[in-house]
Structure formats: structure tokens, C-alpha cells
Amino acid sequence: MNSIWDGVDRLLDAAEDEHAIAVHSLQFLAIRRWRETGRAVPATWLDDQRLMAMVTLALPGVLRQIRSVVEGPIVLMKGPEVATLYPGTALRPFGDVDLLVQDADVAHQALLELGLSLDRERPAPDAFHHLTPLRVEYPPLKIEIHRRPNWLPWLPPPSVEELFAAAGPSRLGVVGLSTLAPEHHALTVAVHNWLHGPLLSVGGLLDSALLSRECDPAVLLRTAKRWGVDRIWQTSSRAAEALLLGEGSSLPLAIGGRHLRRVHERTMVGWQASMYLGSLWAPTPMEAVHALSTTLVDGIRLPEGHSWRTRAPRIFRVVRSAARPASRYDDLVK
Image (cartoon, rainbow, N blue to C red; front, side, top):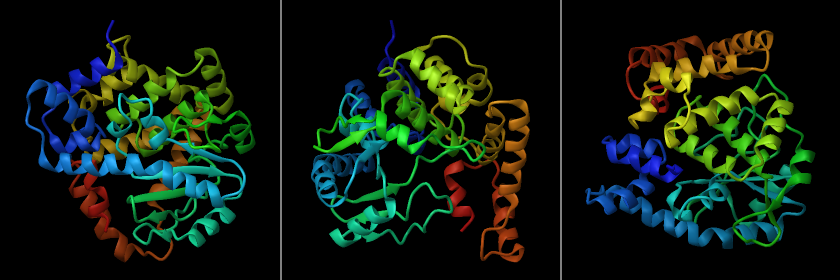
């Protein structure tokens, strides 16, 4: 029987686009695999690997400092927690640490008083799921204090009280630090990935596959239905099984997952289309129509402080670059 890691190795053996491999968050796994098979490893990856090793070693100390000044429960989500499911915790890249707390404003202020600084490179988000990220100088990290998980705009987010009540000890072993219950974590990560682009990256599907192995399948599906994300979960998990395990079939993967099988980047037009079409995975047809219309309106709404005079040239640059990699989007809209 093939394992998830056999599937990852198979993809990396055929992958050739070094930039795309990093976009899929696979560069550290690629270093390990390519060394085993005698392929040359890019020097920039080795620099990143050394930095990731430093972050991994220093992170528990940073979290202990945070724990010492923040009152109430702290729930670690995503990045470093998911990394504990990899063959080595430094094999999954991350730059943000996502912490769910009961009083985000108080915790945010406590960390500012501890010496963390506001991340001026990233403005406060429009959504209310987390406050302006905080910067740790050493190791270089961003700390995001969450009021709730990032969630689909057409669905109410899961109850924070439910998440706290079901949380268990973090795998990082920091006293007083928790993580989400397995089914909650798997669904939260799947929804977060969906928001960034349905079936966008191999790394995202890999995370979902690893988290699902920690769950009772019946409990996971029941929770997904109760939260209204069962269609998203089933689509993501089937795509992961087909891509990484070679098990079953996935029509969305067959239609929109060519970039995953080849470990290429999705094009700008492909990514934009997936962002709009992803709203059709709402629980019911009526909700799907409403979600699509909301997504379309949000896509053309002008951000506060902008005008069509300044916005139109950016839109033109994006349209003209439809065939370029989606990772260029931020550069094109500046």
C-alpha cells in the first residue's frame, strides 16, 4: 500500500520548477528527497532550511514567553502544530504562528508590552478573525492573535466556545498551550486553504490528509455537516487521496488540478476562476448562488481610500497577465 509520503516523493521526483515547488510549500521535503536520489539542491533552499531549523528550535521558548503574559487558554492552530505530523518538524515551512485566545485585544496588548512590535509590512486585516500581526525579531516570526478562525463569508464561523471546550494539549509540549481537537483542526485548515484558492497547493492538501488521519472519520464528517462545510471537506479529502495515495477519483482534481499533479503554479486566470467557483461549494444551491453573487460583488468593490482612477490600471495589469503564475498577483496590484 502506498503511503502519503510515497505520493509526495513521486510528485517531487517529477517536479522541475523550483519556484513552484516552494509555492506548494514542498521545498524542505524536496531537499530530503533530492539528496536521497542524487539531484542538485538549490542553494537558496539550503539558506531557507537553516532559517527554518532555527525557527523550529527557538519557537517553544517564544511560546513559553507568550504563555507567561497572556491570560486564559491559548490554542495553537495550523503551521507549527501541523508540522509535528511531518517526518521532521522543520520539513513544513511556516512564517506565522496562529493563536486563538479568549480576549484577543487584551492578549495583543500584553504581547506589545512584552516587546513584540506591530508588523508594519502587513496592515490590519479587513476581516475580524485576527488582529494586526505582531513581529518577533528572533527568530523571525509573525504572531497572529485570533478572535476566531478564518472562515467562509457565506457561513457563520464555528463557535469559539466549542473550539476551546474540545481543545487538547499541543504536540509541541509547551505547558499551558493547547491545540484544536483533531476534527476541528482538519476542517479549519481545509476551510483556510479553500479561502486562499480551492485545491491551490499540494502542501495544503498534504496538511489536510495528515490531519484527517488523526480523526474518527464519522465524527469528522458529522462535524463538517454541522458546520456546513461537508462538501468542501469531501472535495478536498478526495483530491488529496487521489493525488497523494492514488486512491479513488476526483473530478475537481481532474478538471482543475493539473498544476498539482505537475507541481506547477496555477495561472492568474485559473486562480481567479477558482476563487469565484469555490463559492459554489456552499451547503445548498440557493446558498451557493448567494455566495457566488457576494464573491463577485466583493471582487469589484473598491477598497476604502481607493478610486477607479487608481484601481483600473491595476485591474488591467492583472487581466493582461492572465497566463502568468498566481504568485505574481501581489506585485501586479501594487
